[in-house]
Length: 376
Image (cartoon, rainbow, N blue to C red; front, side, top):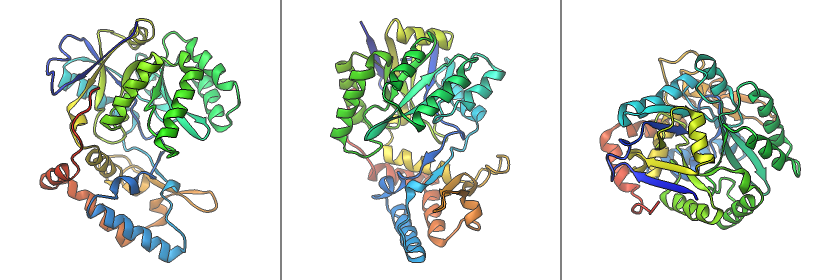
């Protein structure tokens, strides 16, 4: 039997009181490479910001004769591993008054957990693994790899991502399942990230679970995906027979919008609770109630703001945003532009800075209001 309890902190203020520990899963650091392809989609209906984006696209088209391709641009989240870990830990300890377990999962990279586990061996070595699955792809959260084997395992996972081979995926998943303290989660399973069509992606997710579901331990309820999509994940979990688990997917300075509650004292104990006992208690935190587009705009501000307190190379936003040129080389924007760059970019940044005003945030909260909460 499986059991997933989903709790909403604003409806049950005492939800965490009967649990000793809260677990933050799926969180990113500067070791992740993040596409900027989402910017036009999330800003299309936002006044000022959308206009700034259109101006920049037109300026680029006029000067180069080609279309500005946001898919060739990427950024790295602002926080280093220790900073990201402490952000998640403090939310749990200060607001939930619980012990904290934190698993950082950068895209196809285990450096964060590897570095932190040297300081504290209790910190898990984890990764968000990209799995090509034509015509799209999926992401698996692989949490708590064995420290001595993690580098070799990551090399194998990365090789599959670069060159997927028929039958190899089952072999790799079987190997991961041999580690009793490792948790394998299908992250945001119904997010059509490749934009092949929502129905087509859902069918692909069903096919993926039919082939590999017995090697997946849980499906993720994602803290940065809409209510409706997470409700559909619940239906998928009922169909596939999986428990559901939290995954905040934090990229900026807003800590994860959901966590798991448990009485486990170590990450290995928590994994056993999910894998063997098939029990999961998911708690959604107040920030999940905010309009998703507003939260994404705030994350965009976290991307493009400066951090004077950070070391050189991370202080300025244009040191953390990169563009792939026609010759295949990658350059930070700081090497391509002076200052904040062309005037449409400056306009865009000024528009984003407006969200620091409580008045603007309140106005956007009303303008971007979403349908009422779905049943999770």
